[in-house]
Amino acid sequence: MLVYLAYLILFMGFVQRFILIPLAWLFPVQTTRFLVPWSRFSAAAPLVLLRIIAGVRISIEGAIGPENRVVIMNHQSVLDALIAYRVSTGYLMLIPTRSRYAWGLPGVSPFIRMAGFPLIAQTRQSLRSDLAAIAAAADRCKRGEASFFIFPEGHRSKDGSILPFMIRGLSLVLGRAPLPVYCIVGDGMWHMRTVADMFTKAAGTRIRIRIIGPFQPPMEESEIPDFAASLRNRMIETLEDMRAGRPFHNVV
Image (cartoon, rainbow, N blue to C red; front, top):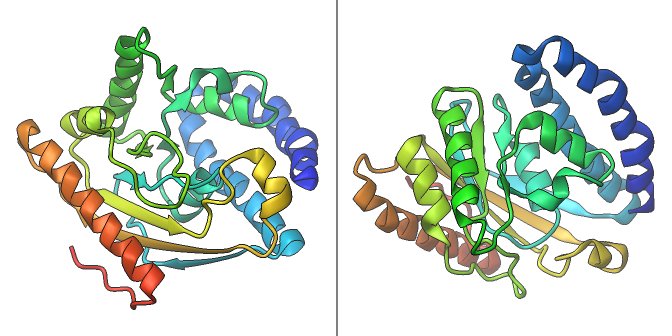
């Protein structure tokens, strides 16, 4: 973590402040294009550090296709979004992000602002503005400018199980941008829920990832809640298969 913090400040922060941000000012239309490879590199770098320094091993089964899509993932740890970016290609992924993260995090906050992540506060008072931000991001995805990524559980699981889905945001996205849906199921990370956990609990971790899909969402918005429930059931079954050691078989 100390090495990664140095990387954030000295390298990632430097590149974004003195190269990417000026490029975004000069060529705003091209911002998304050069952020795609940068986002994958920025996700891969800490995972490489974890492998080399802390002995963390990640196995990945399945793949996300080249088409524009919506990606959902179960939420176990602070590594989840990095892994999602690592396995996604072709499109910049927009992730609903708490608004307080848009400022003050070296390397991370400037990327959130450049990419145009939908910023949410997750309070009762902010519900309308939160949904408006998600809807605007969904419209960008429908126009082919980006893909959408969401943790439908809303919060990290304390025991690695898949929590009930909070489907309002997912339903809004699929209603406005009915794109193919891929599901990423991760396991082995739930003991690293926070940055503090990473300092003491990351070493030697074995992480397993399975990617299932694509699943085509229904055309009728009224059917989206049932579709979301079916995705959760598939993810639960996939997690059970992973823990039981059953071989990967992507049935769509």
